[in-house]
Image (cartoon, rainbow, N blue to C red; front, side, top):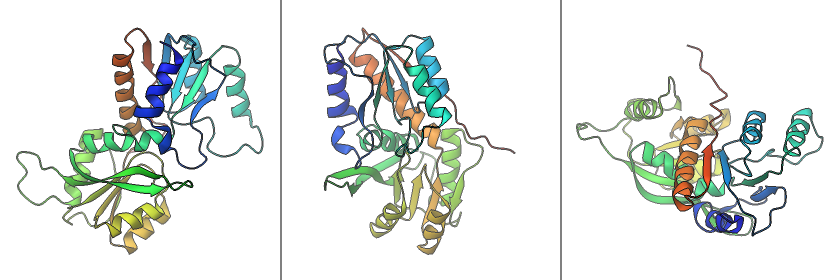
Length: 271
């Protein structure tokens, strides 16, 4: 497989470049790759952790496709962690392609994966504009699909139980009334900031908001707006999306070896 073939599929279809949010890192991130370079082994990962880089070097991967980049803010000072990663990467001719928010918004990406896993019915998309005025469909507006034996109205507690079961979670963080009936849900996969999206979801008539990136102030805002708020597992949502991407790429390029690095969720629950 030529690098250019993979690049075109990613940037035009599977994780469109036009869905990049503002100045975030996207595309070829480390090393220069000729368009006619032959790629034989590709590793997919959520993060460029030291463990992921070690894995790539050990298995002689020629290209890493990562959801996140090495850093998420401009470098003001090179800390030891960054130095260690760059030192490792310099020892082997490896290249890195970063997807970032484009893979959240993409059809079949992180947000769509969350919708499918939770057995929701897609009604519409929730868009935000980037600095260029381009509308980015980062979220999904959904209604609940009841299981065959579900007859009673679906409550927040029912939805949380579905999340725990389908994602195999021991606990779920939420804001709201467990007995409240849920009719319209806004789903935002990944790590996109929430304040303006929460307000937009409420304006669109949503009574529940699901995200993998919530903080204390999001909770206060949701409570003030009488919006049910649920935090999903950031890692489990994104690793399922990356698994699907790995499978699609394996079918598109059967002559190439694609491997998925599963780092496991860094957060653990003490019970």
